Structure formats: C-alpha cells, structure tokens
Image (tube, rainbow, N blue to C red):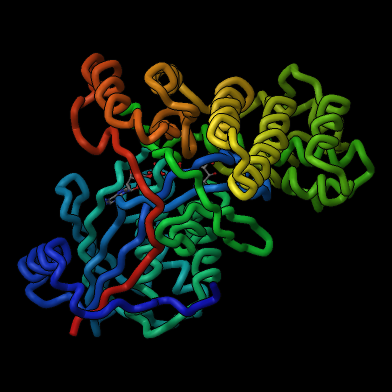
Length: 458
Ligand code: ADP
Ligand code: NG1
C-alpha cells in the first residue's frame, strides 16, 4: 500500500478515445502537447457520514466518474487553467504568488489547493509553471466528491510537473490538508479513497494513522446512485463547518465533564480514546452529560470556564462566527452511533451471514434516519428519493456525502435492478421541475473503481 505515486500506465493507453480527445482540445487551446495526464476518481460513501472529521472510520468506494487533467510543465512561472466545460472559465496566475479565494470559491481555487499542498510540502521556492486542461464527469456539489477529485488531481499534476514522488498515503493526507485552504474543515475520507481505492473493492478507511482495508461487498446486490438534483456547495455555505464545530464543542464538553484536558481535545474520538470506553458506553456518556436542548455559546463558555469571545476566536472557524445555537447532544449521538454502524457493516461483510444483505440494508436505513433526524443534513428531496428507492426494492437507501442535497446510495438485489431503475426514473425524475429527468448520470448502478492514476506521453 505504500507504493510510490505515480504508478504509471503504459503509453498505449493514450489510444483511449477520451485521452486522445482531451489531447486534441489541449493542442488547440495551448498550441502545444500535454506531457502527461492524471486521473482522480469521485467516490460514493456506503456508510459512515460526517464522522471522518471526528476521527472515525468510514466505508467508501471509488466510482467510475472522475477528473482528468492533461498537463504540460512550463519554464515560465505561470499557471494557465482551462476546462472542457464552458461553465468553468479559463484562469491564469503567477505560480509564485497564488491566492485562494475562500469568499468566492470558483473552480480554479480547488486546483490551487492541490497546487499549494505540494508547493508547501516540498517547500518549492519556485514551483514549475503549467498549462492544464481539466475535464470532469462527476456531478458537482452532489456528495460524490468532485471537489476532492479536482484537488487530488491538481496535487498529482503539480507533483509530476515538479519532478517529485510521494507514497499514496502521504499524498492522501497532504491533499486532505490542502483542501482545507478552501475554508471547509473536512475529514480525510474523500482524498483517502481517491488515492487508496482499488478496483473491485470498497475500503474501510481508518485515520491516525491512515490505512485502507479491503471490504468484500456481498454478492447478488448492486449499489445504485440516484441524484436528487439539489446542489449544495460546501465551501459557499456554513452548513458543513457548523456541524464540524458542533462536534468539536461537544467533544470539549464531554472531555471537561470527565476530567480530560478539554483544550487538548478536538474530536469526539479523542474523548473515547481518553476514557477507554466502547462506542455504546460513549452513547451513555452523551445521555448523561449533554442535554437535547440547543446550547447557547454562553452556556458552552460557562461549562468550559471560558468566554464566548475566546470560543469564537480560538475554536470556531471563520464562516461560523455568526452561529449562536449549537446542537451538541444530537450531533454527538449521531457520530458515536454512526461510527458503530460502520464497524458493524464491515463485520457483516467479513462474516457474510445468510441474512447479510438484510442486515446491511438495515444499517444503511438507520444511517439515513440518523443523518436526517439527529445530524439534520438531509433535505425533503433526499428523503423523498430514499423513500422511493426503498419502495421500489432497495434493501437499504441513504444519503451519501455531506448531504443537504446531492445523492442517495441504495443497495438493490441484482435481480430487481432493471425494474428498480425504471420505476425510480418514473417516480422521481419524470416529475418535478428542475429534475432534468432521464439524464443517464442522475441514476446509475456503480462498481468499486480504481484510485488516482497517471498516464505518461511518449
Ligand atoms: P462535491 O460534493 O462534489 O465535492 P463541492 O460543493 O464541495 O461538491 O465542490 C464542487 C465544486 O468543485 C464546484 O463548484 C467546482 O468549483 C468544483 N468542480 C467540480 N467538478 C469540476 C469540474 N469538472 N471542473 C472544474 N471544477 C469542478
Ligand atoms: P462531500 O460530500 O464530497 O462534500 C464531505 C467531506 C468529507 C465528509 C463528508 C460527510 C470534504 C472535502 N469532504 O464530502 O470529508 O465529511 O462530507 O461524510 O470536506
């Protein structure tokens, strides 16, 4: 697993029509030839939502949709970015002086996150300039990790353009850190599966230290992604970071109540590790210590023996400075129970009991309910779509990714797949105003795909 990146593919792969087409557009755009190409996949998370940034294991797999970049290093310190999608406008900047705009997170800022990650890691005094052409097939802002695929792909091309290599695990950690330059305080799930995915298998991703373990999914089922067609850009809203902050504050209150150093506690997993309790026992601690009524910042300050001003300055992110109400009990309950569901899901996959499919489906359904009711990261369209999927034969359906829009992932018995797709299409996509129905990429079955990759020019 510690293989160096990039694992290169043979140059014959350039015969692939998609790469050749990208090369053609590159040539007409930049009047020169790309020297290499990088590919980074999106992902679907099967279970374990909003717990990576709390330190807990998650269970995603890579999908076929990806970000592809054709690149050419330049001898001048300038970065020129173009995109095959005309919605994403051309952008140029001096490579020695990049600026990431959190207030207006246009697409090139995600590229620059990956660029800056490599620049900082290797302390590149004068990073190589580049011409880059980007093409993406992952629906954006839909919980399938298009932003991280772009960050990881940009990190890969920057690594190559500067003649460096890194083990995959380090690249994943570096890209997780660098995506935070956009302002969202994400965990490391997306960047980890992007680099550590292997074709044919989902992965249990664990953190600190980062590792990815093979998970054999049951035979006889298909995993189907259905897009609610509601978009939610994480960096442009404060929903996501508010949840990260609520978990952070909950961990501090739990730590303080049990005599653990709350200032050194940042994640809910830190409290569990300090108390040496099981996840079930942590749920009991939550019941005992936290109350279901929302907390004001004043109450949190009082409990911790600090001032609201200190909390805003030291603990809360820039885009959560206006938040005044925090639901600590509900968020902590979701996190500890979801973390237990992930371990149970993995155990069932490994032990493969006769009723494995029913058990796994049940866990996925419970996960959706917890995201909807305790974590409040669903939305009416996602709930409706999950219900429709279950109605037409899914054994389990749940929102995947950050939520507040985006996609549902369903586990569907293989022999029901065709009817399932037809019925869901009819029930969800043919009605509704902006559901650009029948578009193939709104509803599709997916198989575990491979991780990020580099293709060299001859
Ligand atoms: P996701 O859940 O897909 O990661 P985010 O809202 O976090 O969604 O990020 C989506 C952003 O990523 C888009 O607004 C855009 O800036 C960038 N992005 C996604 N796909 C592409 C693409 N093909 N080309 C350029 N930028 C892209
Ligand atoms: P998506 O849905 O791709 O934006 C986000 C986070 C993940 C994870 C999930 C929720 C980033 C880059 N990604 O994913 O780390 O927390 O939400 O489980 O912040």
